[in-house]
Length: 119
Image (cartoon, rainbow, N blue to C red):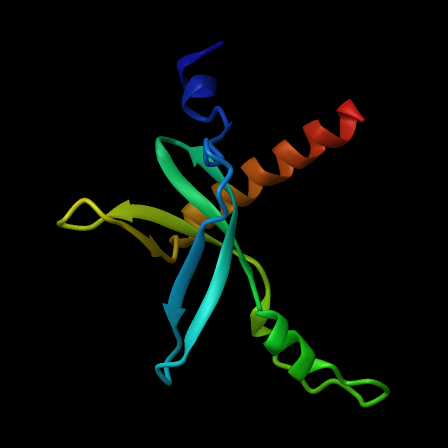
């Protein structure tokens, strides 16, 4: 395996203890949004998380529409965030730049394709 291939090697670094990691972010209005860390990927020595929106049972019940047409915001989709350390060594989730985003999407697609081919 070449050095370049090693550098681009994908590693799924899910949490060892299998505890669900919940990430709390604030939107532009100061509302707290909750995301579950679905998985982590290591791409080119940088770590990324796939964050999926979560809702409490209470929020899910409030969201029930029945036969009404949903006017929900589509901004609640899963997304990739780059994981960096702040000055205190704590993990922070930031938006990847365009090049990083393309690389992590390609790595994720490769991982999914590999899993599909094993089934």
